[in-house]
Length: 81
Image (cartoon, rainbow, N blue to C red; front, side):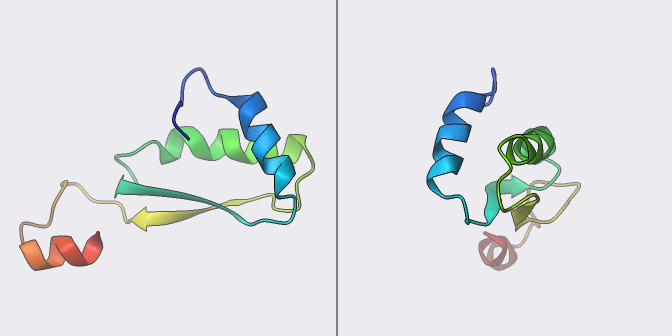
């Protein structure tokens, strides 16, 4: 998604209707608590329910929750990315 606000419900519905049996996953580079996941998850779930999509839940693929943006170790940071 390129636009988060105002939320593009109609464009999302259009795309989801093309893939009615797809599993829906949100992916981001930022940590779970630093990116738009908490903004997007309820909106995605609501949209899936509204169009009666096979997938009712949205899974998350990304870095786990963290208090800092990086581990401080280059190798560990690369592994996380």
